[in-house]
Length: 226
Length: 226
Image 1 (tube, chains in turn purple, brown):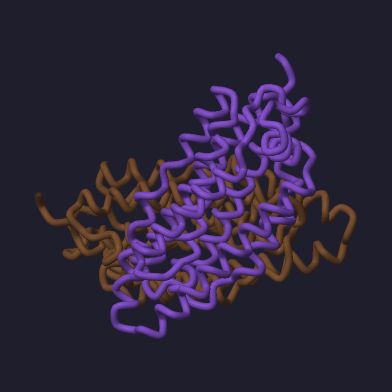
Image 2 (image 1 turned 180 degrees about the vertical axis):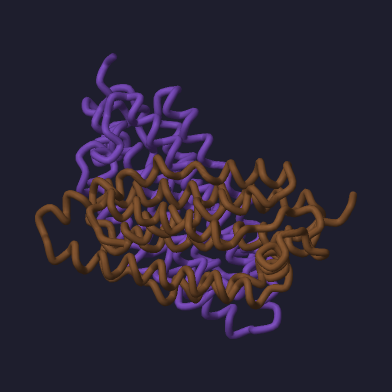
């Protein structure tokens, strides 16, 4: 078996640990749920993240790489993100699930385009959680309909989440050679870089525009300015 | 469909919420893990609890009862138990997984004998977690081999966990009519009680002896006095 490139393993490691840390965070934030019904919805969401993590972890293993080794470089960044974005209450927790989970799904769809076929199939399987977060949307809309101040607070909160996520993504790319080459090789010369020979390059500018557009649409669904 | 007895629904509700609260607690206690490898093991354990919860919840639903309604009466007791037994560090967390998960499995095996066939099959499926907790045993043994004071502290901690669990079980039985009738009907006259017509009575004395014996064996495996 040809050994996978550093860029591929780094991409898979990022996605795997993103799902795993999402699992832990959603399970913990379920404590904020006002009743059993809502905490069950959160447990179900956390479970979906765990299933995604398991799929990617098994795939990394099948490429001959220890999943823990692939994920380890990204633990600090994700844990730092979650540390800096602890929801103050149940509604902030729901916005975080909605914004964060959706951004992660969109990010995964973008990078799926860069990957060799088998890895691509795995990543596409992890982009199925949108139906599970409808309950976040409906709960938030009902709550904001009767509390205008909540709407303002949650709009600020959503912007902070996106800002933290972008800052995190930038420093991840800057600090990891495989990710850096993949992104900069593609944006600087449009061709494949040496370190990521089986990967297609990412057009970072366009990807960023697409991610931002989708985020804006989601905020509009909630009745929030992005 | 004949409607299920109060005692059956209460038993299933207790077991379902026990698994769900175990899921949340193990996921939260994974924060104490010293490294990624250990936090992954905890995530896997939490995931097993969630699968058990899902099985029982779906079964309750199939009996025509809302699982949330069946679980709701037991939320306070389990949450209280977890609140009073928050591990102070990673090793206490592992002992809690080992002692608590095993006691729950043994308890489920005991009550499985009381249930109609279909419910029995479901409960037996939830008694499969022992292979997943072997890592707790080996990690604890290694740590105690090099720290004799840890051994003393963890022996005390395990006794406290069992004490709290028994106190909780007693108050659950005392406060819920179906569970009360099932247990007392069986121990007082050895026959089936009216409120639990399709259930076989529990011989509480013998069950308690079996649970205690198994706990003692587990403590011996760790090299701890029960």
